[in-house]
Image (cartoon, rainbow, N blue to C red; front, side, top):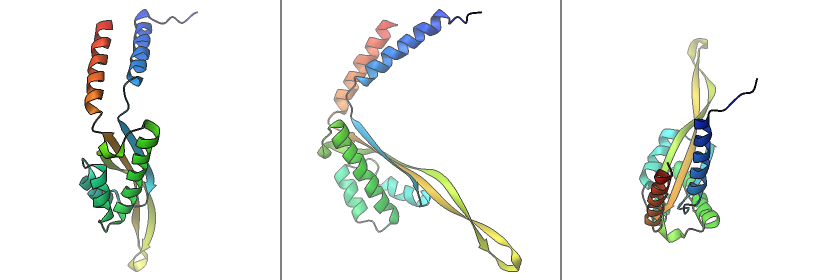
Length: 159
């Protein structure tokens, strides 16, 4: 017995392929850097992440340079990586970049034993974080929006 694919799903897959091709033709305006399994509590790292979100890259570097927190040193490295990705991979200029997204997710936890009185033991959780920073080019955002609108019109007209 031969398995037959319904026509509707075949059309759908062709549509998605075309859409994917068209989306890849859009100009690249953002770059991303991720640091995973960093040995810092996500709560402490989020405090620093919240201070640089939405700021220009230069301003974010200034904030991180003058912050005495351990998380600031780590964020600075991730931000440098994101800026380098933007420059080298997508040819974006550093002057126009800003931190569009900056978030910290929980990583795994290392569990350690803390001896207590009367032979008991408590568990200490040493937390890890996954830090993600996305930088965008302000000057190309309008161009990107226009291209996206044109693309949506093109896709809707094909349906």
